[in-house]
Image (cartoon, helix red, strand yellow):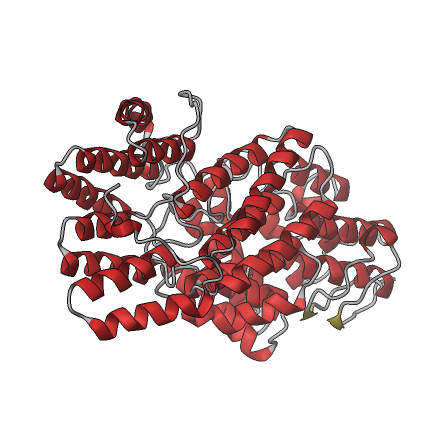
Length: 531
């Protein structure tokens, strides 16, 4: 016997000891045909699914299936837990196997969904996991199915939020960088947020939709809510920092990501994909660097190196290399390590800049050649690119990513510019950096830790300032700050440049902002130091 059940759920911890640390995952309403006991687990699974807590959500959906084996939506939910919806699909087998447990074919499975609404949800994932078409076409078909379901149930918050997410996913599958799908998604999620401020999907998808410097202010309220309502799902703890970083809220970026990293590490087991742990640790280190807390930033890198050694995970090794390189570039503690062509682009760049700044021009030129050898693959080798959900070391990129490889091209221009400057060719250095700026401005607006690790506008400002062109330098630093608010070295450079250009009020304002959060020793005047 099925029971109609409409639950408003403040989802508290269940008795299952493995996930007893989950205290609260938000509020949502999702009426289904499940029995009350299956419904409790199902609601919890949906709430955690909205926060991208994949392992925890799978466990809840499987509990619902065990209690009620023919409950179609418990299988629907589980199928959505095996692939990040904003990255390329890498696992078709598990979702299809889940559907096969529900029934032998699409007709038989859909027949187990007793209401038009439940059938609509199931039909949508049948399109998503269908055999044949490539994953991009299936993502677009899923988006279309969710659009039809939303037209049928326009006032249903769960239909609306999952439709909003399908639009974000579809934008990435289509490589649509117009932001039209993001804006539509964000508008839908904001509508739900107005009715239910603690809906985990609404606050989450508002953040993803408005994750760029122009639109981020629209998501700040949702980010603050999301930072509090899901304290034990790593991605949910991390996700508000996508908006905090756009506002230069470095304390929040650092501390929130430490929490997210700790939760991800607690759940991590050998063989798991370390995405949540790697991503939050990466961003946390960036936050500490912007605060000037270099000791903690060093500690975060050391932690990654230990984890990479222990778990032999390429993603962890990649983040360890990235954070080491970023530490050198941000702190300007220059030193050169032996490198090979196999080193990451960021490692090569950090060592190349270190070589220039310590006077080892020969080594810098060798490293420049190594970077040059990587630039022909710029159209296929990802360096962070458009619609990347993660900053720093990205997950598998979308094929055909129009921004793929641009970061290494920028870093090559930057290192070549520093070599030209060291050789007394300031005009050539400035031209190279202006070219780098054009490449960077052709990329999707920044939505995370600096990529490339030395923003081209910032480096252009430093070189212009050293060339005695203070007014032009100030413009370059201000452009950097528009793209990455409160970035410490851009604020520092802007303060120096405005002072040299005869803009005392602007200089004082930039110094005041920098001092409002900076915890470290005073930054050196490296922007004016030719060394």
